[in-house]
Image 1 (cartoon, rainbow, N blue to C red):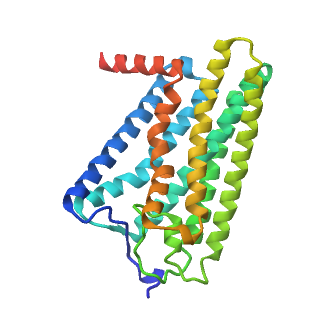
Image 2: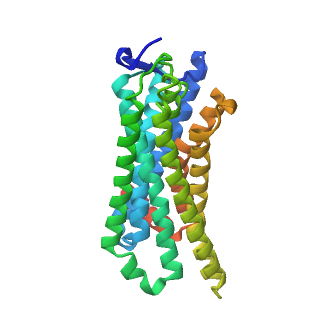
Image 3: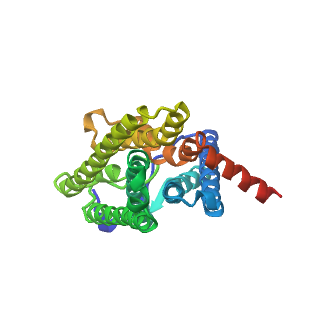
Length: 308
C-alpha cells in the first residue's frame, strides 16, 4: 500500500518483454509520429502560406492541425523513449504534465469539429448570412473558446485526479498517463469525485456530438436539394470527413472512460486508447485533404516551392 505523497514515479505499460519486439514497437510508433508530424506540418504550412486558404474553414483546420501535433507529441515520444531504452518509468511531475496536456489538447480538439460543423452548416444552409455569422472576429472568438474550454477541462481533471490518495501502487496499465488508469490506483472510497468530473465532461462531449449530428442532418437535407451533382459532391466531400473523424473519436473516448470494469482488459484498453489518442492526429491530415482539391493544390504548391 502506498499513497500519492510517497510516489515519485509511475510505471507505464510495457508493450513487450523481448528486446526485438520493443524495437519493433519503437519503429512503429516512430513511423506513426513522423507521418502525423509531416501531414499536420504540411497543412499548417499550406494554410499559413497560401492566401487563398485564409478562410474560416481553413483557419479552424489550422487550429486542428496544431492540436493534433500537440496531442500526439504528448503521448508517443515518451512511449517511444521507454521502448527504446527498455524502461517503464515516468516521473510523478511528468505524469501530471502528461495528464494536463492531454486533457487540454483533447478537450480543445473536440470543440473544433463542433465549431467546424457549425461553419459547414452556415456555409451550406445560410450562405447569404455567412459573412456576418462567421466573420474574422467570430472565428477568433470561437477558436479562443475551444482552447479555453480545453484549458478548463485540463485544470478540472488534473487537480481532481492528483488530489486523490493513491493506495494501489504506481503501475499505470497504459502506454501513457491516462485518467481512468490512474483512478484504478486510488482508494476505493476516494475516486468518486473524479468519476463525477468524467461523467460531466462526457455528458458535454455527448451533447456536442448531438449538436454535430443535428447540424449534419440539416446540411444533408440542404445538399440533397442542390440541383448540381458537382455541387452535391463538393458539399459531401467537405463535410463527411468531419463526421467520420468525430464519430471515431467520440465512440472510442466514451468507451474508454465510461466502460464497465467487467469488460476491461489490458489489451482492450490499449487498443481503445490508441484509437482515440493516436489514430485521429495521424489520419486527420489524410482525411481532411484527400477529397479537398483546394488544399491538395496548396500542398503541392508548398512542396514544390520548398523543393525548389
